[in-house]
Image (cartoon, rainbow, N blue to C red; front, side, top):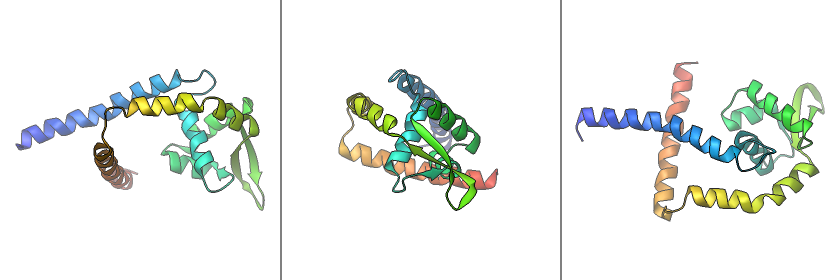
Length: 152
């Protein structure tokens, strides 16, 4: 591949990250009228965590988002009864976020929709293609970490 072709491909992929992210978010936001795709991600991060609760900062770090955005989402989900936000036992400076039984019940009720959403997103991919995509995204993630250090 010539240098110019490689640069054009890089530019295309760079733009595609944003376009695909926006399209995925729009489609995911239509999955459930009670929560957005990003709120779903926040809840999934909490539910998949080995800890019962995570601090707002831990959630933000795991989601690749700002503490302020995570706090705003968590507060909206708390108003809906999906999350509880409490001061951490032993260190009142930290706010911990945990899912509620209402959230668990709601997530169970939409489980088949979530599975169908993910299945549709990755339909047509072989296991090998999924592995290669995962490896490529891991490399991109590492490069983004380097950019964060450079431009922090």
